[in-house]
Length: 476
Ligand code: GLU
Image 1 (cartoon, protein in one colour):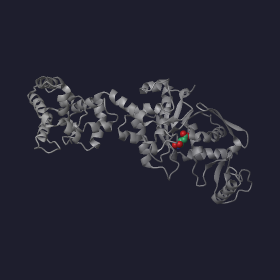
Image 2 (image 1 turned 90 degrees about the vertical axis):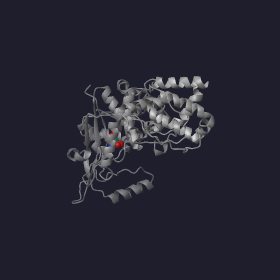
Image 3 (image 1 turned 90 degrees about the horizontal axis):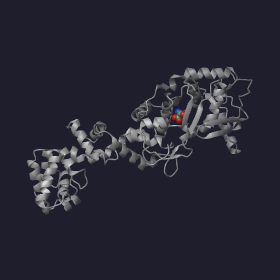
Image 4 (image 1 turned 180 degrees about the vertical axis):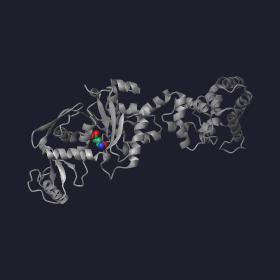
């Protein structure tokens, strides 16, 4: 078999939707699995709806997901001569014809067809015309087969048979000399030697028309695989109502690209009941045979679960690097070193489901402007807590080793002295340090926070209990 060549051809009329990203991913995985090439083509023939920003957003999204392309991006807007040449070729071979029908004529015939209950198709007025009206603008239409069938041998859907009587004589070049989608896509896929077209099944109805054009142009017909769309939990087409649909929104929400890639791969494709795949495993295991016929149902909880899994498994140094922009986005002035940041994320990575959540959890590390939760204060910062906090504070102040073990030794001594369990001693300290009752281990957080900041917070809590400190915020 010749080298596998796949493509992703987005129309730059908006952000990259996760459905589009999944299509890109399947094409990427299929190409990589077969040692082939993955081509990127921007379908910007619709000049009014295509924007520069959308091109940028799509390229950024693909790069962020790590779906690197081997060729392109090619822009259809720069390839008009190629479409024109092929349209000319079809005209000269009698496989296409000039259509002089005006928009108004077409529209009024359409209305008549609709009224009489017929499918509104072009009535082929110009197909056999011998009297081309001089000086009138014309579009170029493809001469579709009038009868018989066109079969799409689809690698996901199986054999899908189309009755040619249902297929229109498509316009391939508009009267303003611009090519139309179905035509460009055939010319481009043929010239770019794409031999596997994997795309959403909303394009299946276009495929028989495209197959007829490949044949008319003497181009080899590629293999097709139409993948079911992604639906929301209510089984309607995935939309904003169901949650974030743009790839960059996932980026902003603090998803890791590996997690989203893993999630998207499983939307419509399976390998036994395995859920977690490294990128390499996806490349090794991906096949079209295992793409399901049923729609993939979007499940926000599962996406989040996978993201938490990837955050947990990430080397802390790497996690510290990727979380930095999220810290900056929240407005923190990050003065600390990378080593400190690495130590900090290590205490949180088991708990955070997204990078945004991780930064929220890190507030008490990143700022001294913490708010003590009033319920936590009522329960744990009572007058009776004073001697507990004092005892811990004294020992911590005297600690010569400010690390996990040194801090633990202080608590061991305090609990022994006070005759209390660790929980009873740690909880008021936790509230004083973090403002709440839930946090990573007390030794870890003190270690990360550092001696001075820890002592200041304990002093502040003691002052609050004594009634001569502000309720919040704590300041150093
Ligand atoms: N530009 C088309 C789209 O974004 C591509 C269709 C195709 O894959 O042929 O839907």
